[in-house]
Length: 101
Image 1: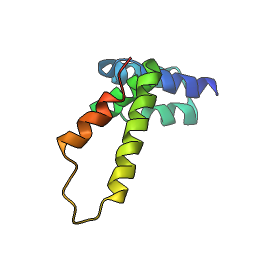
Image 2: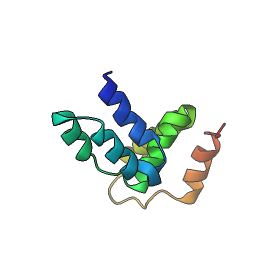
Image 3: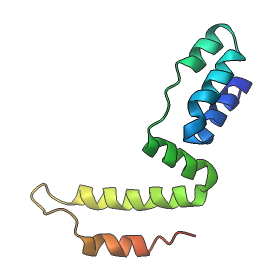
């Protein structure tokens, strides 16, 4: 991974409220196409930022969430279009089998 890529990752790993100032500072430290690329980076939405934080700082939790989502997706794909939506009774057992540790 290049130094620029590492710096961009660091922007997205940092506090959301510091993103714009950190992006501006990084862009000022660069020149040419690298500076232009950094200036064009968008501040992430809160949900995207939160998912990134879980990915980088709590990877086991992120991996468990993906496994649970895949189970939900498999169950959804087996259901017909006419079937009612998944009930809370179905969701609770899946959540219980995926303890957050």
